[in-house]
Length: 189
Length: 298
Image (tube, rainbow over all chains, first blue to last red; front, side, top):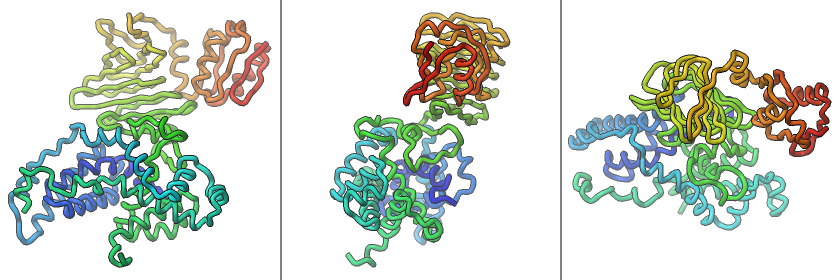
């Protein structure tokens, strides 16, 4: 088995790009950032264990539906049931084919987000990342040029990847740490 | 600040390390597999980190990378980690539009959501969007053969033109601003002009001239689907132009008078050796190879 399986490639191309939309919906369902992030994580776990993944034609709609079903399941299991939430969840519009403004914006901004994340890396992490990923130099050449051991090179590259991953994750962005709108926050508490 | 407090961070840090090892060619697969299968969160974290590592797509200068159509860039960039689901070509989706492309010298065949088949010739790009009442198809570059199954209204777009298609088989090629549509089965309708089987229509931005094709001409048009190029009463100039579509190292006719020599024949499209042999032996043309081109001289 290869490290990057077809399902991983699909996950990266088809699932992760919808994270923002999914998180926005999870916020409406859960009412708070922490539960919303848990819900997103649960949906992702489902996606990665779905056997028929290759047959899913509308990934976004499938994910939003899964999120809603999981949320309803959770609400039913919890001791204190807030019926308003269940009713809201069941009537929530899935907007299956509507273009997602976040996603469109994200496509346009992906490159600048990445450049910004790269710019914010510590110098020594950025150097190895740029040499390996962008200039495609061989690990040996990089290690020799910078007078690093291969294990130090690996550590710096790992750190760079971790920081970029964190910078690019929608859930790290502050707009999801608060309820979306003042009008909706009444039902949260 | 202690490692214990940072436990929720652990999968992310570990995932970044695995991606780093992967990128450096130092990944122990068995060890990695054990970590990944231990927890779904690990698999998610790994994919997140890999996506972030790949967020830079394409090669070379950062500033030269277009900012839209991210997925398509992933396909076109083909970085060290790129791995296609399909074979030969790469399919991807850009929000509501889906698209696929085939590189120079490549082919790819795909099944569209309604069950229709599209085959992409060398250096081609094809996009589609299906709704309940319309199937929109778009030849963005190159040449596409479409086997359209019955269903909602189908509209094929070229650069500025659109044609409505009945179920059937079609070959659509974009030549500059002109869309060359050949009907093999079924019907096409461009404005008030209807086109039937074995007819082809050149849809230029001005007016559509209709041509009737012989069986041999039809065969020549669709030969690429078998990985072949067919020249029937062509000139060497036309033949070379046709062949160059499939080649990254292009054939260049150095002496212009060679371009008018009549040629014919059937060749495989991905390997010019036989064609160049035929040119050299059959026509007495001198073929020399440089780093970037095959040069044809007298």
